[in-house]
Image (cartoon, rainbow, N blue to C red):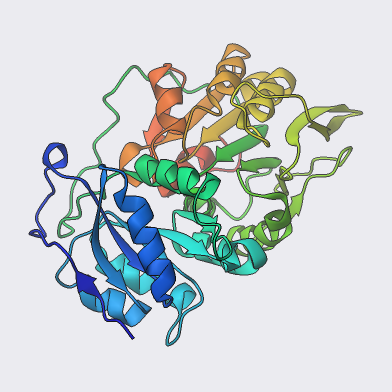
Length: 369
């Protein structure tokens, strides 16, 4: 079986982004898949195949000497396998991101959601034999470009977290929190895990989540999030009543919005086209949260490509609510949060664990620790 092979090498110091291409590693036990993916990627001058590997063990060997920006990882491989190797690969990758390219991304929602929860940034189903080109090629190249260069990882040292300096931040309303609505896309599952782990056991308000995922993945995602958040998590159904500390997740084929229902609120699923083009979209969720809860509504926009969430965030803020955004350093893709920050809609830009702390500060039961 082919060993990891570096075709080019560079120092492990900080990359000079203006003077090099995005460096990739392809990890797949199929020699055909490695060759096809490599040829496909190298047709674009933005990329360079820095290494290929036939197993997770080979990939770890290569990462000792080769710096890459993104690792394309198959989940079905001999030895330790792709899924179990993700934490070790991320630890050895010097800031590189992992993108799952596997048939299991289409056939096994459990495996894919587990991979994303372990820290993989994105997942793309591997097409059948003879179907690698066309739409698959376009989607793969677009996603790899969005991921871009790896974060520069230096030896950890105590430091004061730098605040966001890109634009003005808004003042946080002082009203008690009444509803929390969180939107995310690429890299979002890992970010959601970090946020919920930092939240208190109870915050006493309903929680909405819109995460861009295919419909079949949603029940698995709900189960995984429930375990991480230590709260009930369910896929939204039309008319479902909201309850304190229950996480309601947008299904893959509808927007999640909220409407008044008696003395409380209920889910209203909609299918109208969203400005972002996403289904589900973060925009309708945030807009409806602001319309119903006003200053008691808080929106959170996590890592993801594009601008989904910025329109809804504007409506939520106009209604008196608050919006938090994930900071650039902790994002897999700083698209959605950046759009919100650049529009001057956010009260803070923080990593997921600090976002959890900031959310907790708006709850009635919060006490400083």
